[in-house]
Length: 130
Image (tube, rainbow, N blue to C red; front, side, top):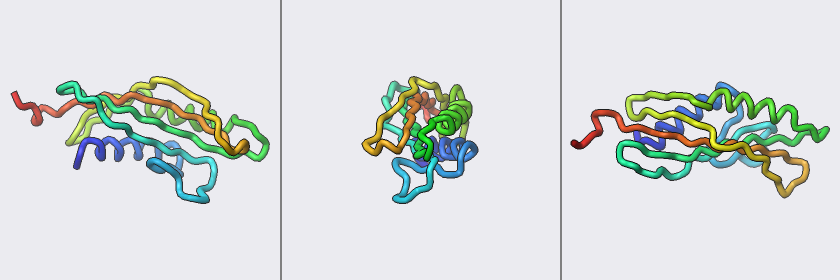
């Protein structure tokens, strides 16, 4: 399995431990709120270290306009990911939070939070060519 797929698999499992509705890239039409989406961006290859960006988005449409449930959800996401070390047969990586953003949606009923993480993936020793 490729490194990005191994990383996605590990991130998906960590997020599923936080919330049951988690999708890569985008939620299906009609998905029940709240939910989480995430996106893994292309790596920057620095030899034995590859850096990826991980955007994790929390979405909610609270009937009362309160963002409290969304903030609690995103704090749980952060506890699951921040400084997490993952080792698989294919890849080892560490996750570090870069920033927390409030993102305005075109639909005023929808609330969105985006947490951006940097993943530092290290090659396994068997992959070294030197």
